[in-house]
Amino acid sequence: MAATQLILLVAGIIAIGVLAQLLADRLKVPTIIFYIGAGLLLGPIAPYLPFIDARIIGPGSFGDALPAVVGLAVAIIVFEGAFHLKIERIREAPSAAVRIVTVGALIALVGTAAAVRFVLGASWGLSLTIGALLTATGPTVVTPILNVVPVRDRVAAALETEGIVNDVSAAILAVVFFEIINPAADSHGLIQGFVQRLGVGLLFGVIVAGILYYLVRYVDLAPGDAPRNARLLVLAGALVAYATANAQASEAGVAAVATAGFLLGNADIPYEEDIEDFKGDITLVVLSFVFITLAALLELSALAQVGLAGVAVVVVMALILRPLLIFLSTIGDRFTLQERAFMSLVGPRGIIPASVATLFAVEFRAAGLQQEANLLLGVVFLAILLTAVFEGGLARYIAEYLDVIPMRVIIVGGGKVGRSLAERLEDRGENIVIIEQEQPIVERARNDGFTVEWGDGTDTEVLRSAGADNAKIVAAATGDDDVNLLVSQLASSKFDVENVIARANNPDNVEAFEDLGVRTISSSMATAWAMDNQIERPAIANWMTDMGRDGDVQEVEVKGGDLVDKPVSEIGPRLPDACLIALVTRDGETLVPTADYVIEKGDMVTLLGRRDSVRDGMKMVNPNGE
Image 1 (cartoon, rainbow, N blue to C red):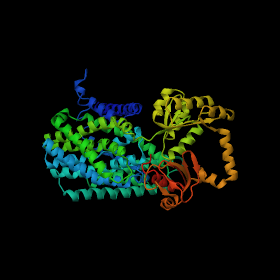
Image 2: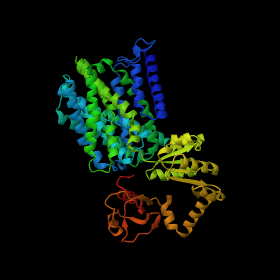
Image 3: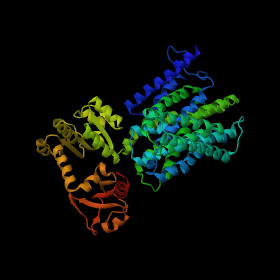
Image 4: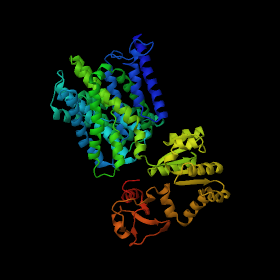
């Protein structure tokens, strides 16, 4: 009977977690808010609900197996987050990311510990343990926020790097401090303990990543089932890395899975997309289980014990220490003031503080230290609750108020033309939303990784829901000219979109479109231009299409930096190798600049060259990336 009840309980938690994910996607808020809410309802709040006499989930619901289950779940979550952390993304904000996880983490640790010590009167050892745990933001809360708040790559890169690295360092440091104050633990000293755990984790992570790379890359995994076998191998490898490292030193497993995930995610391995999708689904399941369960095990008495003093600690942590560390860490980087403010106000705490604090509390209670256990859980879960609700729930509104979301490009029509256009624009860093009303096309576009608004593009509310109020470009790319014309008119008249482009399927309609002030691309004329380019200019035609992926041509506005009021002869040597200024547009006139031509603020500069060089050149011309 007990086994049946446990199965029902686990199945119910996972089902609630899936429903929470669906609800969060619908409302565009981080899922963690619903996970914690569900956990509280199933745990400490349940006895106060009608027709329920006791907790649905309590301390004895899982027996002694919960620490092991939580540990394996955390391993999968951290591995998945590290697998998605690409070197290319980190390069968007390298110096800032490094400072955030070093100087910034130290500010958060010392500042939070001091607040706990002087506001709550805890011992320095316990204060430092709590401070270490609360340096971890973590991918479990940051990634869902970035999914609904599509900020620029440099902002996302800094926040994602902080989440992964601080998860590891926070877990290890917390264990080291905990061993110092736990009477039942055998302390090895602060520095020695940290270095030992980190070293063990890095070693096992590198070994497991190397073995997995060899197996997936060079061993025949059975032709018919190779993608599935690759997924299973990687999952098993993550669990083995965690378990073997943890067997050598507690919490070294977190460093091991983070290392293995980062190395494999940046290696050239086959079936990478299959592995990412598989791990993402598993992570959602284990994440919902862990968050709901840990929230359900929370005692209201722990929150009551810290009370308003605990709230004061969280306020200091979120509104004083967080802005301080972000602004100090981003000095001299390309972040705008608004982006720095956004990063300051978005740093919710996640699964590592919750899971490790729960395990510490179990050991405290076993040693008869009930007050210390309640204070630890109270502060940590209060920080998670308040930051998740306010920072996670309000992240989108904060971003919109601070204007840190890049202006959107809306493509109405998710067919071949629309998807091809979306691929090219997204590759250039644009924030793309496709509007499509045919369900099969919606599913296909979403499977390709695009954000798709399901509905009629001629409906004002659908356009508004897709972000037309904040759109830079609206491209009407359906196969129906009447629809394209109506979309163009709505975008111009209702939403005052700066740049509206329409596809004319019938060349006879081009003149009618243009008479209404709509910039129009005729399908037949576009095909004729492409064929003419292949005939007269085959080299540049191949270079600018998918057959020549190394080349790129980009037009960017000069908004500042060291290039303003400088002649082309002086700017040219400063640009990256294989990047040239081909054209300059000023006051509606476009020309090929001479060596003496002086670039002014507000000019539109066309850069031509190798793809990476052009992207680097764009950052020089427009340092803020706007």
